[in-house]
Length: 208
Image 1 (spheres, rainbow, N blue to C red):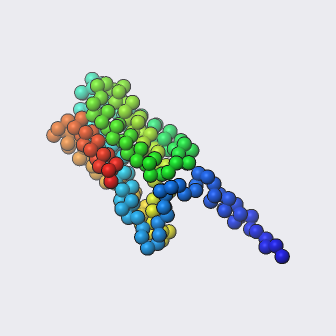
Image 2: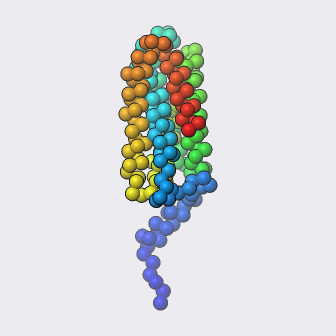
């Protein structure tokens, strides 16, 4: 006698086998005995580096505006440009990268972080700086679009909440680094030096 198949289960199986959700080469599921805490820490550092770069202009608007010969309000559009580009990156990344291995995609966002911070540090004009910040926004949006799904794959189900909390701890860490520390270093050295330090941080994340 044929066994009746639950339509809901059949649908779930079909969804699980969608090409974009299948495991790619290099996307190894973590075993319950060996959660990938090193990779979780690397994700947290990625969050810290990306958001540090995003928040940096908030504490450096005055010296940036003075050096570039624009008003603080116009210099503040560096944050706006990043946020708008982040929206585009977050919406487009799942569709554009669904058939690719997650690891090289995430590494490419780290490369964009390094390039953006370096270009900002060398920016000769506000237009150049805003273009560099758009690059950063695309990296941030893309990273956020993949962060949770990637983290879930790194640990067994019982440790998902802990892993996500570790990754998200990069948010307050970035706020501590970017605004108060970034502002202080901007006064001691220069705002360009601060972005060079952010470039070094992004390079360190890429290596890790």
